[in-house]
Image (tube, rainbow, N blue to C red; front, side, top):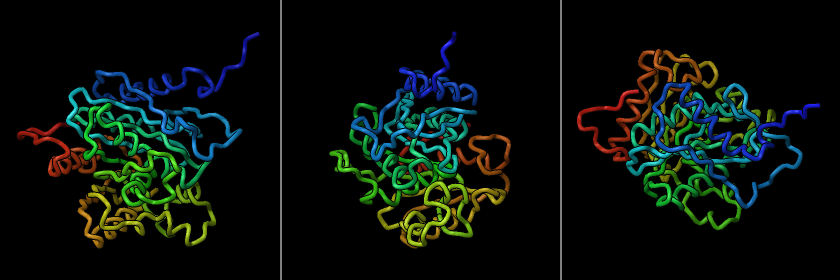
Length: 323
């Protein structure tokens, strides 16, 4: 009699299998072949904070990760690193993680620019906040504390997030020193402030009428108190210490209203934080790296130029990397 199949996360080689899933996503998306195998890094080797007993196993379905119980970074080293690192936060409404469209695809593109990339697998609705904040801040602290090992510079570590991953990245940019993001580990002494942030059609607010309903429900609950809504509405958390931000959104987005980006940009401007925002007419929510959307598909070139202007990428020498 055949034994029943084990869930993926229950197998001893899950870390390696998970890394290969990311590699498969890269190939499916037609991105360049990497010269080094990705490496999975445990975020919490000492034990996941507030780990939930009997919470089930993680699984991958349709190139999306569900029920994250073991947060990790998957490290994609650039073939020709320039010292800059980006922690990529895929979206998925805090219900799942879109590792192909908004994780592996972005990682492959950044690698071609010489950026060493870390794709973050963060906790979701099974935990709610502050777990995702803890995960992204621990990710920044790990990369910064081990910068020499990873071949990057400790002062050139950015975050990039899409949709709900944009909320995670924006939390890192605004709440990097918040007590809720600390766990009492020695790594808490390492700065978790990213040096820059890139946000793609980001979830920003938890307050109606512009909150993304799924993200709001999964993060703070359907009937969250106004104080809790405000606490996780990152437009309220911007300060002059927030790092420079690049953000873009589309008018056609029917899932996360572009008012989210407008609210965040207004808060950045009021605090005197350098910011660049691009609003496009066409492009549905979740378009990732799609090349067929007209001006909205040009966002990688715009983001690349912004990174070069700040010195996080070397001068292009008159030639810009194409998608």
